Length: 399
Image (cartoon, rainbow, N blue to C red):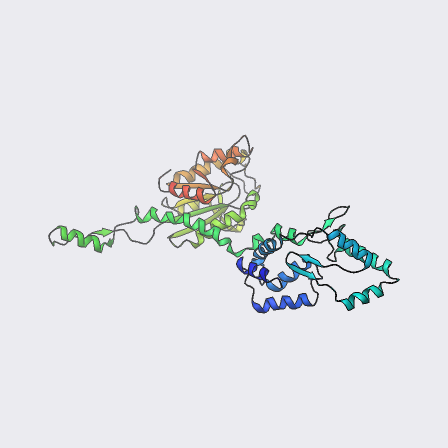
């Protein structure tokens, strides 16, 4: 039963074992799904899926396999016949027989027992139609492919639940997004390998070639070390309006942390705009504080500065003293002064913005004014794989 559903699960990456599948068959044989596709959805997921990271794959397989379910054209006639005679019809869902025909002995027994109980049976059927019971028509019910007769819709069907894909955020293969960022970051290796560092490593092939060209007279050729000397200062906006971009920023943060070709990676945080202080942890509180002057003293101009933030704020936060949004962090100088100071200190700096470039249009986004004020100081790029690739190329040249 449902063997093709098993294949669909495996195809989408849900690792279902034979023992788990047989356990599901045993559960169905004991009626734990209550002849309801909605209950089957939950029972099967409970038995077959071992981790919430596979819930989304399960929903994809469920939706694909059961999406073609349609009620037979004569379904209403069958139900009406049941109500009249008390004999349940064959109920086919796709290629799966959910309710088997009763053998002749059971049919005869039910027909006999229905004498004097028809009104009670009809009431029970009505309740089943209204609640669940596997019926395909009624009001306020749960049935996955049912027809609603009057009233307002009830709960989501199994197909609707699967189609919503509520668990896509739990997928473990989100690392694919990280890998795309990593691919863009690999371009950074070109920055130091080809243009930076002292030539203090003997180039064997170059030495042999030069010596041969000089008729055997030894000519030593020196090259820069193969190791990367690239140093990155990553400064990220934390909290507030950045919360909605946390998944995207987390992917980029993971890509930076996994980058093996960086010599140094220093990470700092700020809220909305950079002022007198930066923070060494995402919680922008006093105990995590480092003065921005210390930041500039400790990091020389060779660091590539990468700032991540939506740059969306009131203009006063950029142009006024004490304009900081955090009242306990009174700034002695306007935000633009500090950003100018950073732009002058670092010979290479870029700003990555999670807001798409179309949102930088001041006619479409009233907060875009601050974005464009900052863009005049520090080259800004969209926080996407394409935007990161452009930013990396921009880091090859001085501001």
